[in-house]
Length: 100
Image (tube, rainbow, N blue to C red; front, side, top):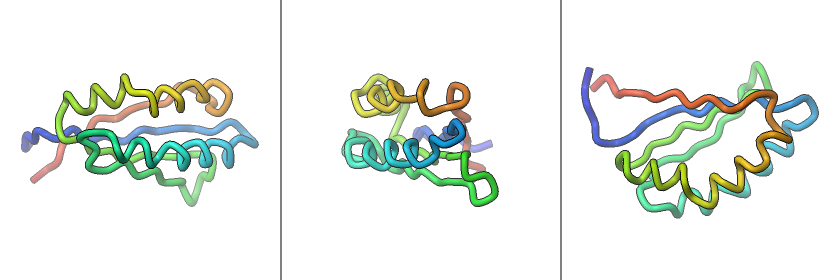
């Protein structure tokens, strides 16, 4: 398994019934601020075509420090403040490691 300095992960979010559009809107509104955070290489939300209540966010951060700053930052904090209203259960973050 290769080691990379970058932090790569997928965040899984499950919207409450009827809250799919509100979750999508909140994520889209947060994107400019998140993309502007130092070390953000990629932060790309996707909605499942098979399960429209499921959203996954593919993230790449330059390193563990910039990812930690993102987790403690204002844009994500604003999103997390909405999660209890919008999500069925707490979001799940899955760390990844590139194979190359």
